[in-house]
Length: 132
Image (cartoon, rainbow, N blue to C red; front, side, top):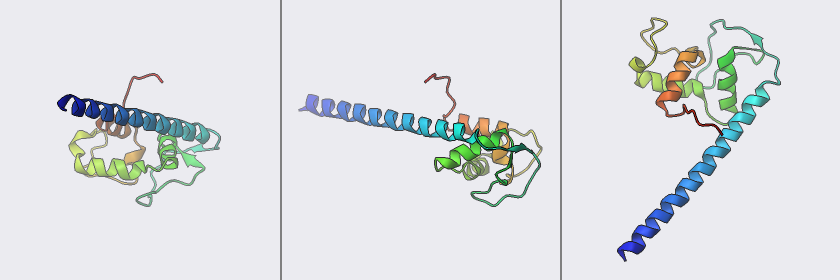
C-alpha cells in the first residue's frame, strides 16, 4: 500500500510538472508573439516623464521607450507590469536600485526603468539563461 501511494504521488507530481511546463511554454509563446507584434507599430522614442493612470496606465500608443515594448507585450497577455512592479517595489523598496535617489515608489515611471524591471524579473525568478 505504501508503495502504491508513493507511486501515485510521483505520478501526480510528474503530471503536474508536465502541465506546468506546458503552461509555461504556452505563456512564453504568447508573450513572444505579443512582443513581436509590437514591432509592427510605429512608435516615436520619447522617454519624457509623464503622469499615468494607475493601474493600467500607458503613454499614448505612438510614444514609448524600450521598456514600453515589454510593458505592452505583458499587458497583451493579461499582466500589468505597472501594477506588479509597483506592488513589489512598495513591499520591498530597499531591494530595488537607488539610481534616482527616490524615497518612495512612483507608479508613473518605476515600471519603465530597465534596472527596476531587471530587479523585478530576477526577484520573481523570471531570469533565465535557458535557450528554448
